[in-house]
Length: 105
Image (cartoon, rainbow, N blue to C red):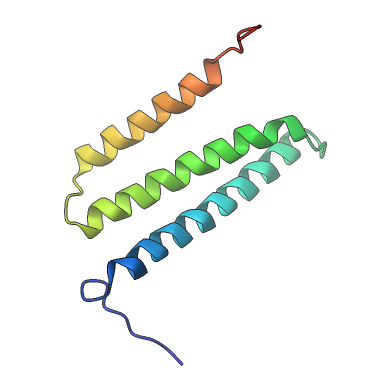
């Protein structure tokens, strides 16, 4: 049975559930693609220390696409918004990439 749902006439709970589910799907997909590329680039060696980094990057990619879809859903998406949003996420990733752990903190 196929359910036809108009996103503009449905409850907010269904829309939120859709975006959360899509975000989790994208997170898993980006993680698996990143892990596969990492394993292939390191000659089939599994590198478990890379898993947190890959999860973080998958999370940021999924936040980017779900964020753009949410902006589009509310009719607020413009190209400069997508550019600024992407740059903010790139800067956030660069912060985590260059962050050094402080001993004793």
